[in-house]
Image (cartoon, rainbow, N blue to C red; front, side, top):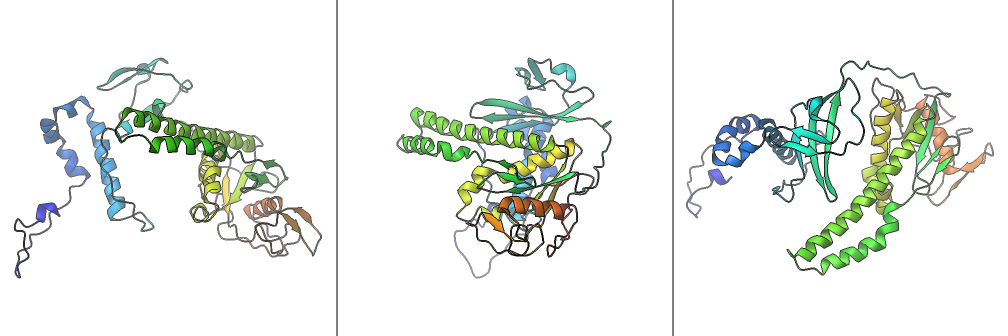
Length: 367
């Protein structure tokens, strides 16, 4: 818009409108990096592929804003990322194993950096990329590994013996088809009062002052602690489920829709989306499936005879008037989820087209 603006601050009856110039794309900006390095000599201190990755990020963000994603949903207008907002930097070039010795890592154009290695690098894997991320408690580096010699594994088809169903909820985090419950820890609820106190203290600080910066750091650390606790709980729960060596079936939840209701805070505190993502990744590594079934009728239909037993959200017990089955409603739903995952119908419970959507070469995540 600015490059086509008329220099005269008026609107005549007849005005020449120049042709719109092409918006610079990824490739044109990449070719112009040579000129950018002449204008800004400090760019020469960074690897070329790192600068190209920054351009790729900007191109992707602008495309999401102008065109939207595959569903046509557009993101907000991109903000300028200054030094204080740019939190990660990528090194797309492969890192040689000799440049990682357990205490240090050597990156191009930066040199040796101190490193606390989380776990030893497995043999046979090549380090393809490295990404440095700045968080409130320090800097982290994420290494992406690749091993082309790892064979493809096709999981076994789900059956009644090798499959388990789980029902996610807010009363209990999940209930499996055997009736075992995993209680929800409510990490955010436990620190909500402390967060309110810290945020009130932050609101009283003068903007741009050192005390305000320290207060922001205290609030950020508290949020990071809650996030780490929630992620740790998700990983341990997934490990407990997959340790049984069974495929895991769950409902295809509309988490975004649920998060817009009065249950929004509890839904975000539970972190269902992150849990299902971890479950899908870990199940694939274990040679198992994480399957999503249509949730229609899983809580209302009886797992014993298939009769529809209407229940409100406050009704926590399933009591069938036809067969006399009485059990916890989440336990009943978990059994129905298992039936749908293996392709069995339970009376009136019909198998949907995506009932065994996870039975693919690689399990997909449905959130």
